[in-house]
Structure formats: structure tokens, C-alpha cells
Amino acid sequence: MREILGRRRRLLSRHDGGRPELIGAALTYATQWQWPVLPGVAADPQARSRCGCPDPECTVPGAHPFDPGLLAATTDARMVRWWWSNRPTAPIVLATGGAAPCAVSLPALPAAHALAALDRAGLRVGPVVASPTRWSVLVRPYSMEQLGELLYAKDFVPGSLRFHGEGGYLALPPSDTGGGAVRWERAPLPGSASPWVPDVEAVVDAAVDALTRTGVSAPEL
Image 1 (cartoon, rainbow, N blue to C red):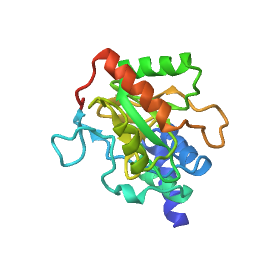
Image 2 (cartoon, rainbow, N blue to C red; image 1 turned 180 degrees about the vertical axis):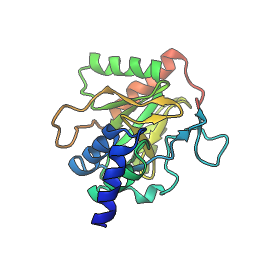
Image 3 (cartoon, rainbow, N blue to C red; image 1 turned 90 degrees about the vertical axis):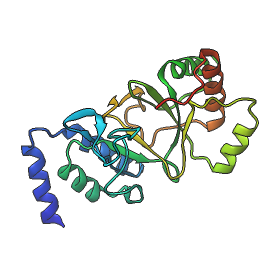
Image 4 (cartoon, helix red, strand yellow; image 1 turned 135 degrees about the vertical axis):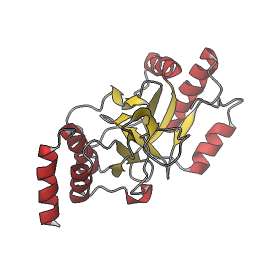
């Protein structure tokens, strides 16, 4: 395996389309923060808005696992190096839940309102991942039972609100997907051993309120 990994590293340095910052970020997530990651399928090189997977109607082009599947997500540095040396432009996909954060995502405009509301309330917000159309607030891992009870207590839950829990996934910066570049709207603090993330309750309360106020209730692809 050492010979294969060494060869792949040399290939990365020669790859005209390579992005060394991707492998660096993937290694930080996996080895420093202990977040299990794996490479995404990537967008279709002939049409960036389409996915490289076989599904012509894929709703998250380039931003999901395909081969390997989600269960292959790992924190092992050697595997991460091998993946991104072999596929140097692949998006970084986080397997949410378990030892990794979960996430609550919503369209970008109400997400900005939700963050502002949390700030005004003096509630601490952790890292926020942003794509051109949606933002995802990272939260502590939660169970389906916990989430179900939380949503059941709401009079109304907008359909545009999404949850990335156990068995889910999320593209992380600095990935480039069919939906556009993925960046940090609020980046983890530099030098974080493992970024702090809030409980899901406060984030859901602010998200539901923001979506209701902005009228963004229908599901968005």
C-alpha cells in the first residue's frame, strides 16, 4: 500500500486539474476533527449543472457519494490520501451523524435571516456551510426520535427545511459541485481541535421562524 500511495502522490503533483487544497481539507476533517469523509461523484465535466452519476435527474449533482458508497466514509489518513490522489478534484462529502456533526439546511436567504436571529438572541452558532442556493448549519448529532419530537411540537414545518442526520451526507468546502462552489459562510475557528457545534433545537426554531417569515415553505431542489 505504501508504494501505491507514493505513486498516487506523484500523480497528484503532475495532475493539471488537481486541487491540492481539497486533499488538505479532507485530511483536516478526517484526521484532526475525526469527521468521516469520502469523495463525491463530481459533476459531469461536459455539463457542470449535471451529475456524473447515472441518474439524469439527480437533485444534488456532484455533491453525493456514488463509488465508494456512503458506508466507506473514513477518518483514516492513508485512505483519504489515496482517494484524493486518485481523484484530485472530487468533492469532499461528510457522512453526517455518529461521531460527526449533523446539519440543518435551508435556502440561502432565510438562512441568513435565521443566523441574524440567532445572533440577536445571543445564541452561539458554529460552522455554516454555504452553496449558492442553500446554507447548512452544523449541529450536534441527534437521534431520529429527538428530531421527531422536536418537529412534532411545531405547528408547521416548512418543506424547504432539510435534515442531514445519521446516514446522511453533506458536501464540505472547498468542494466544487454541479450546484456551484461550496464555501464556509461561517468558518470553524482557526486551529480548532474539533469545531464546536450547537444543539439542534435552537437552530430549528430559528430556521422555521425565518422560513415562515420569508414565505419559503415549498421544497426546493
